[in-house]
Amino acid sequence: MKIMKFGGTSVGSAERMGAVSQLLPSQEPVIVVLSAMSGTTNYLVQIGEQLAQANVAGAESLTNQLEQRYKQVVAELYKQDSSKEKAHKVLEVVFNDIRACLGRNFSPVEEKIILAQGELLSTQLFQIFQEEKGTTSVLLPALEFMKITPEEEPDHAYIREHLQQQLAQYPGNQLFITQGYICRNAKNEIDNLKRGGSDYTASIIGAAVKASEIQIWTDIDGMHNNDPRVVKNTYPIAELSFDEAAELAYFGAKILHPSSILPAQQQNIPVRLLNTMQPEAQGTTISSKKSGSEIKAVAAKDGIIAIKIKSSRMLLAYGFLRSVFEVFERFKTPIDMITTSEVAVSLTIDNPTYLPQITEALQRFGTVEIDTDLTIICVVGDFMEDKPGASLRVVQSLRNIPLRMISYGGSKNNISVLVNTEHKVEALVSINEGVFQEREENHA
Image 1 (cartoon, rainbow, N blue to C red):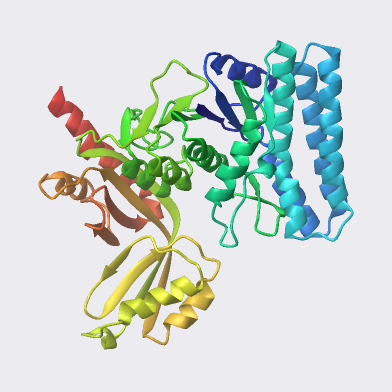
Image 2: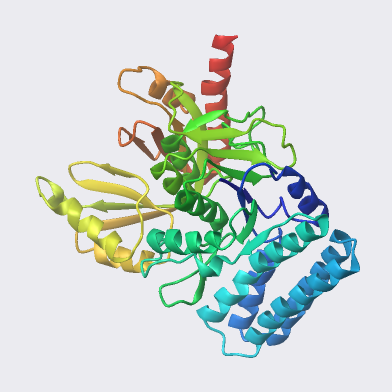
């Protein structure tokens, strides 16, 4: 069985839904995971924001606008009156559910109910489209099998058991359609896997059914070696290892959700990143295969905060770092980079939610300095100790840029540097010229 996930732009219009339908295989079982149509989740977030401000009229106006947009999609997508009638009934149910939340005291529960409606819309409309084409399909409600634990992690055993139960009801069926992103939490309330979570859904489902392949379809032809929005002459990478792809996703490559590699990696299921706009393009294949190439790609992660704790008590004090890390564990804030000296430790975070509390807790260890507006530049490849020169090329290419921190050795797949965000574009361009273009010239 194959898993095919299509993002919001891939199903962003009636025309795009028709194109997606043409990509589905006819000779093997497939589970199609759909995001909400592009722009829908932003509407739903804004509706929630209006309700949080007690602006019911504003929320209702946005709901009406979104409903009119979907009525236009229905008019364009279907040819048969019977299909249009079914689709309008779907719209009626979904938008009644949204409007029901407008009349209640707004809480995180209502917010997550509203956010779930985008995927419920796209999947039901897509299935009706398959019916109109004469293609047999089954809608698998993600809320019947996707569940997260009290720690907000996927409950893999529950998902595997309940998904298999759903599939067993339809022996011989070749096409299944389900929602990405949405799930139920440990209280059985509607919840989600956070923004971008449809990739995660696809990987979790793929692991649960031991799929032959997981395909992530977006609007670009694979993961590029650099950010094509700010760097010229980038190119898609044909092959990445699971570890390399995970590093790139975590440190800013927008094509892939950071969490979506692990379930596939644990079951050794290849993941392919493909382009719905150019389905003939090779894309990127992520697998356990090692390519042997030294430097593969670079990614950038903005919104970084640097925290320096300086204390003479650090000198020869065992247990100091443990105490520091416990502060971040207490406030559930991951650390990205860390460097140490005899009298100071510097580290970075990307979530400012608990920064005041973290700062206060760290001040008992010494002087605390906070810097913001920083960016991590992450260079990914196979940096084995017996491959001299790779790290030197990276650092030399950045010789004209002030480097705040350098992290090397924690992973054989990653060299990371911290720069002021104002130097981000210059850093990406410099690495492109000093690493990738130089390598191409050497191989020419």
